[in-house]
Image 1 (cartoon, helix red, strand yellow):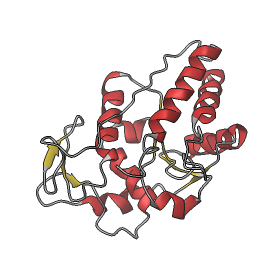
Image 2 (cartoon, one colour):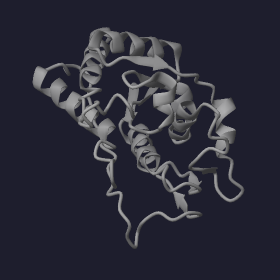
Image 3 (tube, helix red, strand yellow):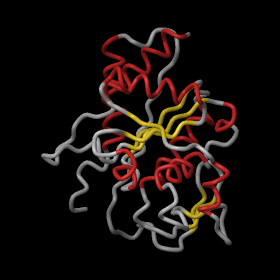
Length: 222
């Protein structure tokens, strides 16, 4: 799609950070997993259609009411796989998920949706140390889950009111697929739609340093 070359910035940042962790030997005692949620975004016989209902890896059903909110569909399966099979102590997902991110935290600062005060504070601190700045957005699931209400599925894929905290709602769609982990584990969702792309329209590498320093911090905290 025209202008969407960097719309895989989240996966690129995670992969770069994962590679940096491996090459630097930062991972010593705990397993580190990187899941890349990738899909060819193209018109074809298997393309997603408006009003389709899909059953996700989490077991939840999703009614597609906006085909442009497509990245979250594969990302939801990725986090569901992680919590079902990898037993994470901390889960980070990164994505160029919403246009609302730029309005909320600007061109250079990612938006952080985190489920505990502890992991939120760690994320902000790592952002400052790495230069990949982040700023928290409200985590209030009970305010945001209703935006996805569907009469025929567990949820829709896009919010009813686009003006209601779009970044938080985007993060909550992902949270809806975490199951018990959302309440029992530590999770941060980093929306980086604008920081991932520079003024020259090329990728900035945002997220690589964030991931490496986060993993280093968590290893030292063990």
